Length: 265
Image (cartoon, rainbow, N blue to C red; front, side, top):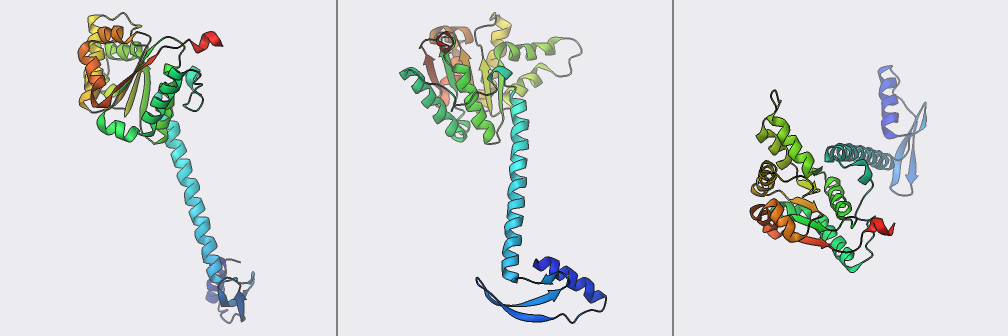
């Protein structure tokens, strides 16, 4: 019987006028001699042992509750990340690096994810560019998952989706302004912009792209750009100013120039 249970019974019966409980001296192998009291539920155990068990049970309860809270937060952040179902199971651990270039890309992505707090402090970005099917999106989402595991906000979107969300504010009756739409893309700790170069690249779209990249640059927020374009083509497409913003603060360009994993499959 636990100390709390015995005490509760004793207090209850004490209020009924029953106060003379049989006691005897007993010895705990861990804590030595103690006074045991006979109650209707049986003889009480070592109070020190009972206190330890109660503290351990409370600590375990708090640990479980904390784990549940962390999982709820992770689920909420993962939902906000908007990772496409096709890539939902991607992680850094599941990336197959079969070439020297792929191994280097994985090493860069892993180091970036492991040191994301420092990347966030410096606003350090990444540019993944090169051939299709080489795992650029896979590694970017792997980084996002690590960021989410730290209870920070990572958001994945295509450039087309980002531009469309801003252009939606141009229609009459929009609930938010263009500035608010851009702010929503600046707010996350990490923003992943996929398929850079797929859209038509009108002057309006390029201006929106620059506003997003520059806004995150000024807010010291890391961005990961993913493109199938070559480095020079990408720089031309997004503009020299935007490209330079991404390179500042220790930003890196990783070229994915090995054969497509999809063709191998």
